[in-house]
Length: 133
Image 1 (tube, helix red, strand yellow):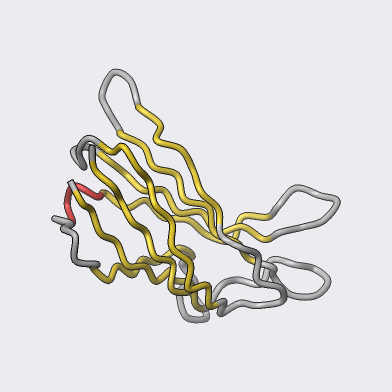
Image 2 (tube, rainbow, N blue to C red; image 1 turned 30 degrees about the vertical axis):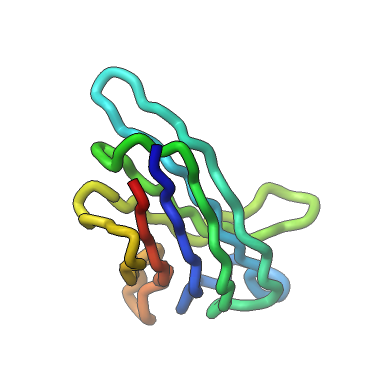
């Protein structure tokens, strides 16, 4: 069984979703095998919260173990605004098809748009991904 390593470097140009103050973003990673008949869930992991920051630097590493293959595997990346006393706001998201990346044990830099904007720069997430079969 293999191991997928996700290094969350940073996010940039995130939308400010808070009415009062600034966004307190955190990132949630979900790993799923997207099959025709039945999806298989390999769990989720969550980063720390960065207070009042639309360009947060995380430098955090997450490991998903017991991954049999990257065939049909997707990494869902969701950025949310940590709100106390109410539901967390969605800041942005993306889905990365891992099979298409050709991952190896050498970390690959992966950058994806998580929030498209007309009047300012797109929000992005900056990762390094590797897979040890």
